[in-house]
Image 1 (spheres, rainbow, N blue to C red):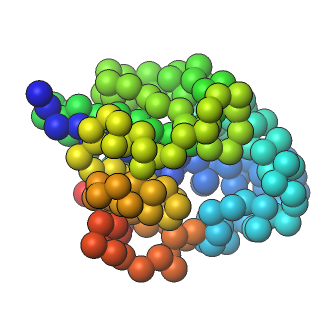
Image 2: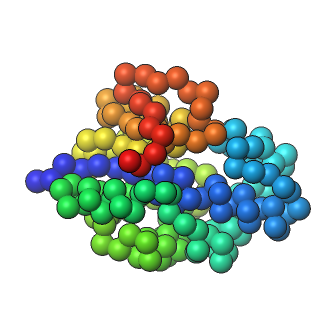
Length: 186
């Protein structure tokens, strides 16, 4: 049996924030740059309610900009190599309702690389909200890659090592025994 490795999707594989920031600037009259996003919670950066952020992100998820978002630099090449030796699983905070758009994006950029895509419904959605640490434990994940501090801590708390993909919103986080920062896919 192959070892299983887990990956977050947005800002680990799919370049979400850069695409969202461009979409937001164009549609909501802001002029933010990626480095301005120093907090994971967008309402703290964009100055609107959590409900409004959820609406704006939902609109983005169904937009041309999301469909055409680029992969994070280096992700495609490294994941293709890893998939030859290991079973790769995406564990995303996205709601189950975004399965179609998510799979469509993966089919364009990383077809036949992942054995499964798990939606944890963290921010919105009809399904049961699940914690990534519990999901990783249930699936027998050996190591996980994420950009969100709360997810990294959740996975690390069940004894699974985490690579924290460096982003402006997680730079204040200090590495721990189970959470190590990585600068890029290489």
